[in-house]
Length: 362
Image 1 (cartoon, rainbow, N blue to C red):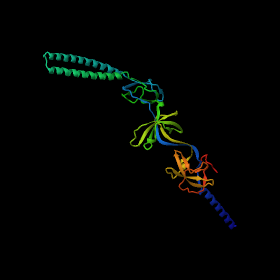
Image 2: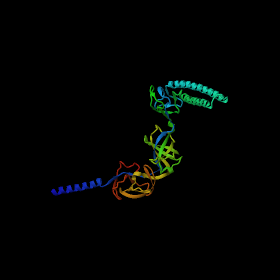
Image 3: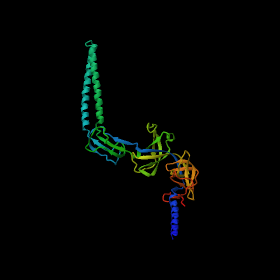
Image 4: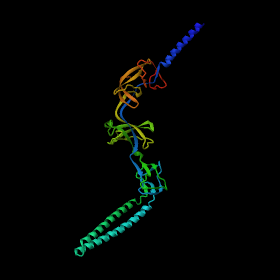
């Protein structure tokens, strides 16, 4: 009886050992099947949305805000009232300066009469050249003062009537920094208006790539705020001024289609198209290891659930996918996220929950 019990226990241990090898000794892998798609070679860059038409309202007159018509987030038309600042002090200044101009004009007339009189007396020998020079100096001083007060009056008049401030562009009011009743200094940053139709993408292109960029090139733009969408754009112009620190140059792109809820300052990802290759064989970039300039290594999962080490030739490299030029067939499967511990010929088990739907499973 003891012999029989021992035999049963030994058989159970062998069975447990085989089960453990299957659970622990076999690697679980996620696989993907190659896909045919358009491979795009592009210059990658990050950028930002900026409005080229933006107006910052800074009243030239300081004073009390009598009326604030602009409301944040609302549309405003060119010529609409934005705000009104009390301008009585400026009107009083115009009146006062006008009086000074009249006084200075009278002084010039008197100096001119005195100079003419002394000049006539000198011709008759009844005065001296020194007396004439004094009258001339007095006339010059009066004339200079008249020019000064006239210039001041012109400035005062240019500001008079500027209490009512009108919108210089049509757009959306994005910032309002004052309230009705506030007393503000001259040139205070009061209201900001931007035109959403003037949104552009400002991308920072590395100096090593800038020679590949030309106006008119197509681009694909993505926004962090709209992660699942892509939008068409075109290179409009290149600003030939590199940043001394980042060694990048600004490139401005024009969006070719409507982007909902676009806002000034949003982060953008830009791919400026250099080449398109239709119907290219591609695999996920996460399948590659030992990458070199034009080659890389991958693991194929065979029909017998074993790894096969394969050297491939790669073409266009995208953000998520890589074009395969040689070394892979359409009906094969590649293992994703290869481990340094994997070896050619290893037995594997396909993780069906993580495997891509298009990959062929046994």
